Image 1 (spheres, protein in one colour):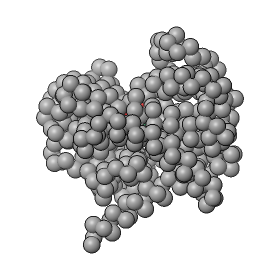
Image 2 (cartoon, rainbow, N blue to C red; image 1 turned 90 degrees about the horizontal axis):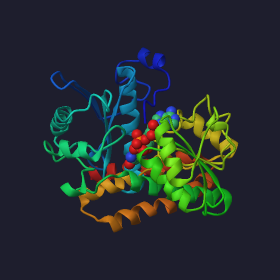
Image 3 (cartoon, rainbow, N blue to C red; image 1 turned 30 degrees about the horizontal axis):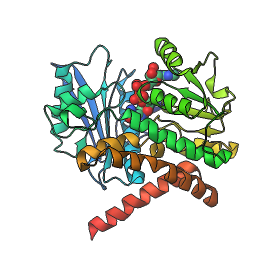
Image 4 (tube, helix red, strand yellow; image 1 turned 30 degrees about the vertical axis):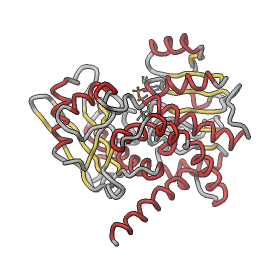
Amino acid sequence: MVSELINTNQLSKADPVFGQLSFDNHEQVVFCNDKDTGLKAIIGIHNTVLGPALGGTRMWQYANEWEALNDVLRLSRGMTFKSAITGLNLGGGKAVIIGDAKTQKTPELMKRFGEFVHSLSGKYITAEDVGMETADMDLVREVTPYVTGISEAKGGAGNPSPITAYGVFMGMKAAAKYKFGTDVLEDKTVIVQGIGHVGESLVEHLTNDGAKVIIDDINEDRLEAISKKYGATIYKGHNIYAENVDIYAPCALGATINDATINTLKAKVIAGAANNQLADELKHGRLLQEKGIVYAPDFLINAGGIINVYAELENYGKQEIMRKTENIYNTTLEILNNANTNHITTHQAALDIAKSRIEARKKENLQ
Ligand SMILES: NC(=O)c1ccc[n+]([C@@H]2O[C@H](COP(=O)([O-])OP(=O)(O)OC[C@H]3O[C@@H](n4cnc5c(N)ncnc54)[C@H](O)[C@@H]3O)[C@@H](O)[C@H]2O)c1
């Protein structure tokens, strides 16, 4: 969550959109403004070769518009590869609403946002992300059919976060199998950074599996509540990256694996829900590989949520959702082994598969 920005100064020197560091041949970027509701949003459509661009809407108080644009560019690109590697017929898109979800989100603003989504005629389909609830998607649904993640009462698949957490847990187990020779997490120490919607559910799976769970969050009340509920230990130190743990699970921020943190990292496995965990995919992916830290690619293991919302479009039920999500275990193991055999980073191995699926479809479409 929050901005996955690396350096604002660097960004603002670039050309406004096409020259952005994070611009990667995005098909369309839509700026939405509505004076009456105070809506300021950006919709990023990265790629629609495999299908309509589906991705959640994040509401966040960005420090400036550069941060918001950078975030939507990075996140929408990530969605393209997430759906591609998961075998879904979806492209990649994402939206950001600039503002404080706690104080500035109103039903009118959400519906106005929905109208902008509708104006794209289904090229972009939205869902919830950070700062959004299922109830917000229900409001969007009042003005457009191009929304998923709506409540079960309204015919949707409900909150995707528990499914995301289950997929992350599957990916983590596969990474543990690869690194430690066992996928049973009993007695493994796992630090979960961010115990929000996904993080809490992950803590539950880990606790049930017998792992020693350490939790970290900026929200003190939440820390107390989750610690009490699951018996997890609250992190009290100053640098969680340097903590001597078996597994680090980033479930809050993007870009936490960066120049400042990578040299202090002690975990042997990284597996979490946050999008775009590597600040620089090439450089930090390679550094993790050199340090022998097994990185379970984020866009692969956090796909449970999109599998859940895709069910609303394809009309499959909970059983199929769980089957597809459980399969994240096999795909992760396959990719970790591939990376090892081909001497490439795990991120690259996952990206190669996703890109080849898109290229194959592109060729089919041309025939
Ligand atoms: N919800 C989903 O289904 C889903 C799917 C795929 C990816 N993700 C990604 O997973 C991450 C978590 O999603 P979520 O829905 O649980 O979000 P959330 O907003 O419910 O939870 C995020 C938590 O992180 C905490 N946090 C924020 N900054 C922090 C910091 N610097 N250090 C520690 N904790 C911090 C917040 O206080 C909050 O408790 C996000 O990056 C999101 O994009 C979520």
